[in-house]
Image (cartoon, rainbow, N blue to C red):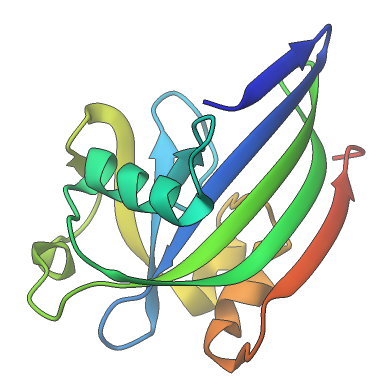
Length: 162
């Protein structure tokens, strides 16, 4: 995984998936066990791995998704603080379309993925995302308008004062 630590500073190269349900009113989010905030499913890229391959691998590892359509929608450069560390994260967010018969559409409440209780998943109403501690917070607006994005959007955000 591409992650570099220098003292209290850390760089991550991350991919994430924006997965909407059939109604386009819910988005699939996850929480790392023992953390109190939610985020989009995904993970870090491996060395010499394209972002498209990385999101496909992460979705298979975490949720057992073997086939899906993916389209890059957002490139994010984010600076933030978490647990006494300052992060510089480069992220690629893909809109992911699951097959119509995906068993994920039938999941209710909080559920675990392939890797067990390490990650907790749930479908959450898009119009209620701001009621959660969802990170990065600025992505809530982007998720609400994801189907209106006609080209790749670049975002540079500095949340170090959070």
